[in-house]
Length: 429
Image 1: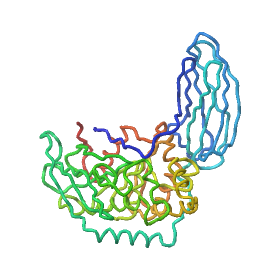
Image 2: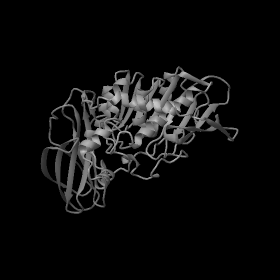
Image 3: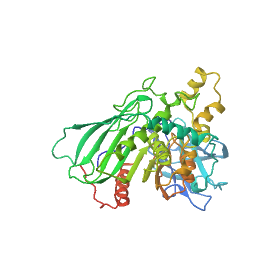
Image 4: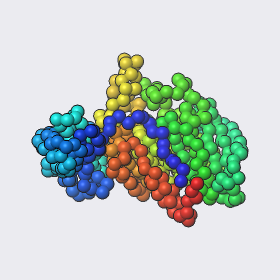
């Protein structure tokens, strides 16, 4: 299987879990398979400390329990001694978590031989019960109806160019170009089985600044690896490509950067449904991070999506998102736009918050989460997920941050094939 790792929306900021210095090997663990508790409010958390030296080491552990948005619930400081060559396990004191949601268990370790170290694990309690209110404005639906109407008036001028591949590849390859919202040319890579027929299709959507490329994985499914504007070989929008694209136009719902990306994904569906070899009743969309958010919104805006696969999704529950995370791009935006406030910023983002779209999704939704994700915190993803009314399921990877492990992609492809009524076999390179 080729790698499907997405180039995710932002860099990861904090390191957690385990660490090692010249004196102590320390890891923080929670005794639960996936770190998600159901109908329980306690969990075993412990530090494992290995003294790799030939001398006794004294150290102090400060246990801190915090909410997902950093509110402190409990602290307790404990002193320990670990003898030469000894392994010591020290447990977090009992704590009864007050309600459903996500929490941070932190251990700050100070020893006589090393710098202070911080270890942290996020755990979840009944995340299906998280229920933050929608904040869609009265013109939310009319805004998107108008946007879709604007797109429909743009002639896509589809251009399909064959690309020569090696004979041993599984599919024929084509470069596709089309005109999207505001006249921007967007493009992608269409992989078509060599045998003539009608096939289910997978639309792959990019993470932030990711360049989607052909994957050549299966010979009985059409795969369209699509790049929205400012991604891959698609045209740039005004302002060029840089790490602050995502805050561009935050002073206006009409000019906000993601309006173009949302509509680009609809245009990609337009293209797929014009292809005679595409089974239009079996089209799936799949993306991670930014692509995960776009998968949510596309499935809500367009009933042609038969299955929505969303990994570590961005654009979920912005008010709580900004309480949990901090991005210098937002700070720079406020500096450059002194009349902008949190209220005006969140007003714009409410038109792009996937929680406000979720109840319009009619197809099944599969979500993948990295429990330690500090870029797109799981609590925000579950706000959108919980508002989906159609069939849905999720997978949590206990120790992953803003990524999914390779086996996740293997699993999802097998499940995708089963969903489309295909055999389980996946062709590997």
